[in-house]
Image (cartoon, rainbow, N blue to C red; front, side, top):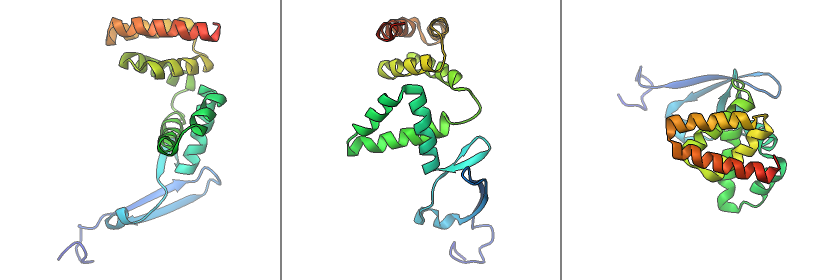
Length: 178
């Protein structure tokens, strides 16, 4: 009695999911035999708060959030200037980072920005730190709050991270006339 035998009780795994469409608030029951999962193409459903969205909805939400945080000009340039190779990453980041993560309702954008600048400073990711520092300012994070975040980073990730963070922040503030 093998996996293809319908009598193989307990060997077949069926997945059942209920998705709530954000578009029309209708419920959709999805029943998939896991044995065929790699063989079929279905839209990915990712959890966002208490409902589910397909990747197109996540991309649209992510694009809107990304533009509000980083600025429309920056995002449009990133997407429009991406070649065929880079376009895949731009779509993935917009859908998953900005749609599925930044789009969750559990934290306000200001808090997410504060977390990001702390992590990026701790990791020494200067380019992304500077980008997200601008986003944090757009989301209402103050210079004093940024200083406190970087001091916290120094205590837990090392003072060289804090020193570089302060240096980068000072340059961003100067560029923005703050």
